[in-house]
Amino acid sequence: MLKYLIEKEFKVFVRNRFLPKLIFIFPVVIILLMPWAANLDIKNLKVAVVDEDLSSISSKLVTKIDASKYFMIECCCESYKEAKYLVDNGDIDIVIEIPQNFEKNIIKEGSDKVHLAINAVDAMRGSLGSLYLTEILSDFAVQQSISGNVSIINISTQTRYNPTMDYNKFMVPALIVMILTLLTGFLLALNIVSEKEIGTIEQINVTPVSKFTFVLSKLIPYWIIGFIILTILVILAWAVYNIYPVGSLLTFYLMASIFVIVMSGMGLVISNHSDTLQQAMFVMFFFVLIMILLAGLFTPVDSMPVWAQMIAAVNPMRYFIEIMRMIYLKGSSMLDFKWQIVILFGFALFFNSWAIVSYRKKN
Image (tube, rainbow, N blue to C red; front, side, top):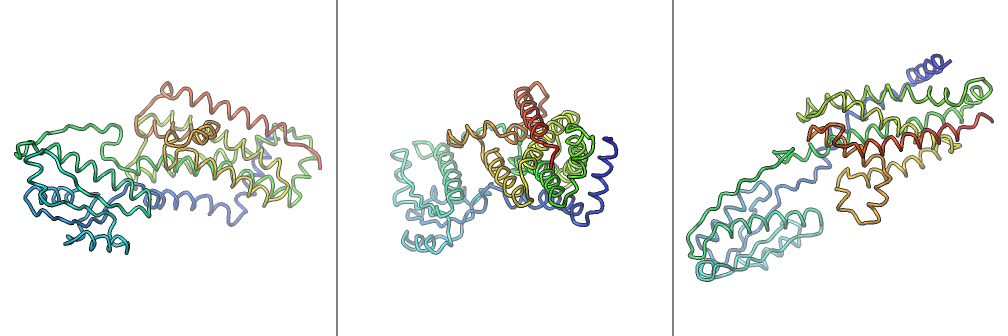
């Protein structure tokens, strides 16, 4: 009986002119565009310099800032008022004002103040730009001795797991999780509800098919489709971004299979409690949106408020994103994320048990 139900699901899928195209085109577009569009690595901040000292040290400071990949010296203004006007018009992101007697104070007193004015209309861009520029100024201060002679301190920095600081390596594994969530949860929820609307589920209800068999027949096709899409995404990430799992591919697919079961179960629960396609769409959209925002997709969970962290604690997407990043970047084994595995197993058991219990074989 299970064989024929699965065959029916695949026939319905193939006969649909729009759905197969959507399932294969949507992930490709997301994985090709999102890492570039949702990149939070701030670069090419426009800087205006007001150098009132015009000394050798101030010139070295300006040169050091301009050499950074994060900043571009757009102009050198004669006064702060002129630079502020550019900020007000949105032409400049940061103004750095070097006061008079800057070099003299550095040589005699060992320190002096530099004024920074940050355009914080875009809070993320402004805060990161301020942080980057502050680090450059601190490093420059360390290089200057109290006597006025340059004393270079060579600092050796080791960046582990992502030595090139490529933001795409942070985003791509999380985007793969998001796509799997939408395909194996969202579409599955719509599948059963659509059968309710067109009346075909009534024919299933009068057959001797058990609830478990019916639920399994809905899950298996989307599991297969999910793994096909997952393989395509892994190949695209490698071909386009040179990003591939450092860890075992077997572990990668095993963890993905657990997560697919979790999201499929959640989709079934929503479909069982929805009477119309619109209702299922809005409910699924609500939960998926909350899960994406509180999963650490764009920002770390530890940086969120306490109440948001409490909600994220019951978000299965959050744990799978952690697993994916550990496999992709660290090459971690299953022992390294054993607690995440236990939690995902708990979610899988909870949602799929709920799906079986909530499915009622009656009109």
